[in-house]
Amino acid sequence: MIVNKKARFEYHFIDTYTAGMALQGVDVKDIIDGKFSLVDAYCVFKGNELFLNKIKLLLNRKELTKLQNGLIKGTTIIPYKIFKSDKGKFKLELSLAKGKKLYDKREVIKQRDIQRQNEKD
Image 1 (cartoon, rainbow, N blue to C red):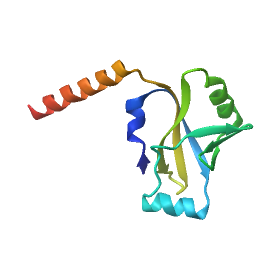
Image 2: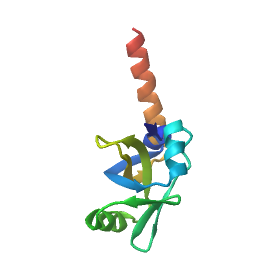
Image 3: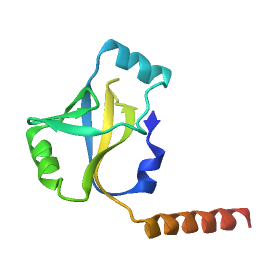
């Protein structure tokens, strides 16, 4: 499983979706070897299709329409996690997200530090 750990820190997730991926052999090998990274990955619409960098994402028409309509100023589509489904296929969890402000990030850090202190005691 490959996770974009910075995504939860940088963005507020509004909606999450699970998408299939049309992978080539090299992409599958990179995911299995753990060489695939979601940190700098991005999703973009080309026509009515959604792509992760150069990989086509497989969503149904209703989900694609919801994502396109949700892309207003300040929102973006963030790839969050790649995992293997029960059937052995690789899936991508992506989210419609809004960027956090600096004070929101400071609050997250503060809460995490408090939680760590409580666990130590």
